Length: 218
Image (cartoon, rainbow, N blue to C red; front, side):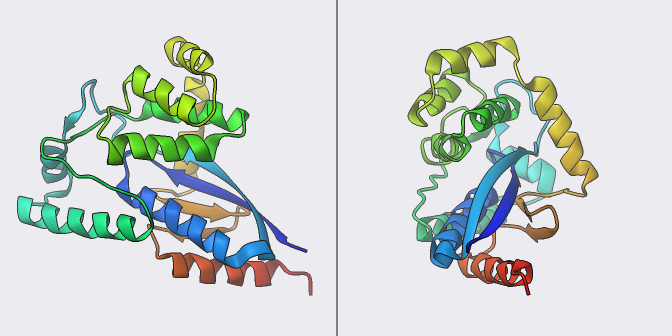
């Protein structure tokens, strides 16, 4: 019988390593086949909770927050782009790109979770931001992502306009920080196994097989 796994994927929509982590995890889950029966729940984490409306130039942001100069930023972006491409995801870094506040995107994801469409919405949001350079703080972008994921766009806009799920998202953010999450992606399996960072799919696969063996009744 497959081993049931509850996977909490703590991440931010504007985190490129979260894209790599998700696609690597999904590849690993395909590779282990019916060894496990996994469900993924996306949990909110804001890298930049104080990001203002309109966002900030990404190069400026990285220089201010991480102290990376232009040459180092280019090397890092190229490495991330290549890792994503190897996993089948197109990550397009554009001149003048901006980073945005992701709180409303997390509200949308929370709602998607009540409809069983979180994975689809997360994929749509990653594509909107990293592939197409869209503003994921913009309601039109979020509604379009919901529609792409098979959700009702009118309901999505109503939720976004009304501030629905704001308290729930903030509560979950506090909870995961209290659990010790300080960086994303952080993957928590069955509330006891932690995997940090955008790991290679092979690393995730080894972890999944090891966890399944650990959970198999002796």
